[in-house]
Length: 170
Image 1 (spheres, rainbow, N blue to C red):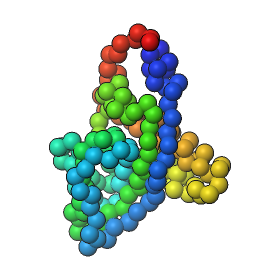
Image 2: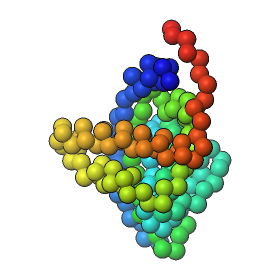
Image 3: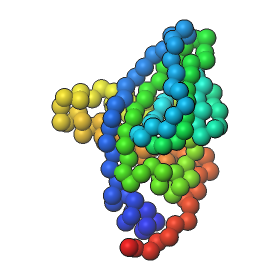
């Protein structure tokens, strides 16, 4: 645990690129071509569903599913539903890299929250931030860190293990 705090958490920083709540109608021509993006992504589905592929694994995203797509993970998405879908999304940079986070905590790409109220409230707070106000920018950053913490917490209830690490200091 000392390694996690001294090396990873003490240096943790999040830089938000963008994010909001989005609604897509059934006939929306929405999709993301297979690519590796430099930023990390949260997708929290609140209604309907869509198809998402992350590093070759296919998922059918449904209400209550929360995806964490780490930076540089090969992924694609497409609208597949008859009813459309709604989701919150955040694109952010995480330092040290989220690849370290995935290897350190053995996180899954998706957790099933069953529309957890606390998670939903954090996403709503994030989207209410005004990017022209310093206090709201700090609020959005704080929300993203709380969401990251919540993701790890909820993932651990789904049998995530902390991977062993080398605790040597440079």
